[in-house]
Length: 361
Image 1 (spheres, helix red, strand yellow):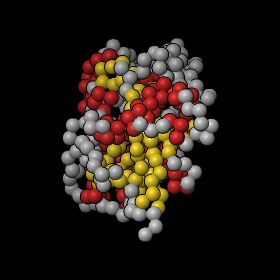
Image 2 (cartoon, one colour):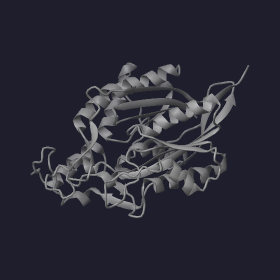
Image 3 (cartoon, one colour):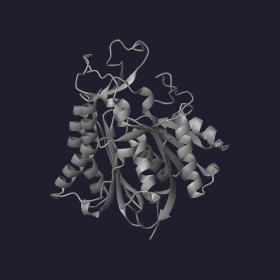
Image 4 (cartoon, one colour):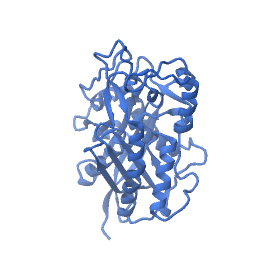
């Protein structure tokens, strides 16, 4: 029997900043509605409702001397060090993000050079054949980079690809927007390597969709909700229509995940873990329930969908690779992966974009 070329994860790493910000940090904030009206609801009540819905109790913020490229470098270095892979053997570096490098005192995005080039520089990789570039795809960016890296490897153009998701959303949060409590900073990385095998393994299938007719600006950059905010002429903050995103996600993500599972020739009962974007605990639970309903299953198995939002928050493109790294390194109680296990990686975010791939450990 002839062998075929597949892509396997051979290393992973992550980095969460040391600055810990608990929900109580927001107790004295002045919150405004998108139309500019001050919210009179007591902040304690706002915070309690927020935690009940999202599951977030605290989040991590980057140090003042760190930017997204620094976090990306630290996650990449962790992946290389923990796997003992020679950095000069990396053929491509793909970095997913949404805002590039943002300094602590400005919301201005710096994307020149691209973050991947900065990471290659920080890693001191000399090999000119190591190609470095970024990909912007909303929160599903890292998953999309994995799908793209798989294409590159299967084409024969690369043997090893370093894939990173890094974000410093704390730098683009409107302090007068309740949604600012969701966002956090962090980075996750994986190394995807070509392997030759007779039986399928690694990335088995994927599915994607993009909806823009009515959904393009569900997530966007805009001014502060506080009309008197002194930076409103120059600052652009991350803004979202939370309810619309929630409805879009629970309506469409299950179908995309099922499509990827179907393409792999599997059933939901074959799946050991579903590693989904850590955006909102209630939303992820609703997606899980609707996914299993598509298979006529009434209950979602316990621990199939790990959630790490409570102490990390939503760091966009970094949530899924960080989640994978923590499981791969046995850092999450009651969660593990063994050879042969089938895992779904999925995400949803700005665009609006949804993607999912099925992976065999």
